[in-house]
Every structure is written in C-alpha cells, then in structure tokens.
Image (cartoon, rainbow, N blue to C red):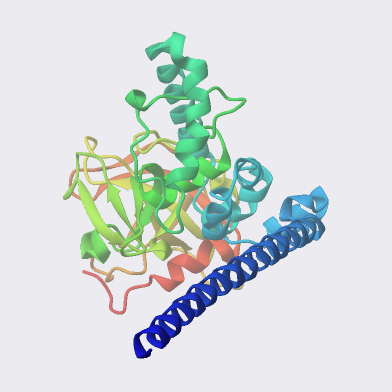
Length: 373
C-alpha cells in the first residue's frame, strides 16, 4: 500500500514540475516577445524623432553668405585655419583673399613695402611656372591636391610645415592657393619667405653702425618673435639673428644698395632739417643710410640773419659723433652733388629729406645713450 501511494505522489510531483516548467517557458516567451516588440517600437520612434530634430537644426552653412562672411571676418588667422579643416565648403571660404588681406595688413603691412611685394610676386610666378613645366600632364590633377594639402597642414600656429618646392606638385592660379594672400601670410609666419627690408643699427647696435640702416634679406622666426637677417657679402658679418620688429623698415624698390640715390632735395635743405644720406666705407661696399641734421656754415652770423639756405654748399651734421670725429660733418654742393669722400672718412652718396615725424621718430628712439667716437 505504501508503495502505491509513493508512486502516485511521485507521479503528481513530476507532473507538477513539468507543468511549472511549461508555464514558465510560455511566460518567458510572452514577456520576451512583448519586450522585444516594445523595444523595437521605442527605437523606431526615437530614431524618427532624432531624424526630425536633425532636420530642424540649422547648420553654419545654412546661414546667408553675408552673415557667414561677417562671422569669418571676426576670426583670427589660427581660427580661420582651424575652420578651413572642417569641410571643403568652409575651406573654400576661409582661404578667400578678402578675409586674409585684413590680417596681412595688420600683421605684415608695415614691412611689406614695394620691394617685398615685388619679390613675392616674382617668387610666385617662378614657382607656378616651375610646377607647370615639371609635369604638364599631371598639372590639373595636382591642382586639386593643393587645397587638400594646404588645409591638412593649416593647424593653428603650425604654418605649412611642408616645403612647397618644385617637386611637391602644384596648381593653377584659378584653383591653387599659391598666389593667395593666405599662402603669402603662411610663408611669412613660417619663415619660408626671405624678403627685402632695411635693418636699423646693424649687428645689434655695434658702434660702427650706430644710427644707420642697411639693406638685408630677412625672414621671421616664430620661436623667438624676431628675425634673421642676411647682409651683403662685403661687410663685417654676413648674417644676424634676433632682429626685433622695431629695428626693421621696408626696403626701397627705387634704389638698390649699390646705386647712387638721386638727390632732389638739396636745394630746399635748411639748418635743422633731418635727413638720411648714403654712406659706405669703401667703394666695394654697399651703401647704408645714415641719419643726420642740417647744420650752419662756419661763416653764418646766427639764426636771425642766417643765409645758409641760399649758399651753394650745405653742411651735413652727424651729432651722434664727438666734435673731433672725422665723421662729425661733411659739406655737399647743392647744385652738382656726386659721390664724394675718400678712403679715410668714407664715401657720401645721395640724400633724402625726412619731412614727417613718422620718419624721424625711429631715429630718435634709437639715439645712443652716449656720444660716439
């Protein structure tokens, strides 16, 4: 009897376990199916809502051209470079000359005189001709590569670290940034472009060059915010480093360093006028420009009855030197001035009158603290 009851209990228990398993399995599948259905439905709704939100958002490129240009005009050079790396449309806008002319004028306008501009145009013309002649068949394909190469390298404060030479491919003037203001700016900032300028007080104010200004080729060093200068081979040194911005001025395109400047101001010079005069140690050396003041003749009777302006000779004084110095004064003929001088005191060339305070103020700032021998 006991065995019979045990068999019945065992059967019921086993059937209960099976039933519970079946019910559990059914419940699990129902819950999973409903959950999956709910999840998929939620995802579809979320994606649809997100797409609708994206459609409602305004991109920077959706702005009117005038508004976008106003925004880009407020950006600094480094910010423009970063913006140019976003996409091709912004790149085309960020390399526009009208955006970079303002930065060029603010940063480099004081040093980019006619001689430097002429030098840059010659450099661009030569480079483009070289690129075109090196491989005419790939000239058009290379043109498309230039913008990508420019944008890839235009990271804030790392100006075009690749060397753009004849072997690097090129571009046409219609699509290439080679002849753009942005490319010019980047070459100046990176120090790739040596340009003509004049350096005050050559050799860091060496006594032999005090109150003078010499022609040189210079380039910018962004590590020190100064310039490197290369002078003519005929001189005390061929190069100089750490030339500050204040010691530079634009080079003259009308007069080369070895040419005699045409003096058209001698007739109007009167005592007290400021001037610059060409001077060189020997005829093998290039000229430098030296600052001076017009003085009185020895036979002048005084300020009130001064007739120096009507005399055929004019006294040129260099007041930075002691009275006994051989370079203290020199006398020029107003009507027939040519290069004058000798191997002892040097040779004097053409004269320029300084008529504005802007021209005189740099010399006053550089005036030596003590009289020179």
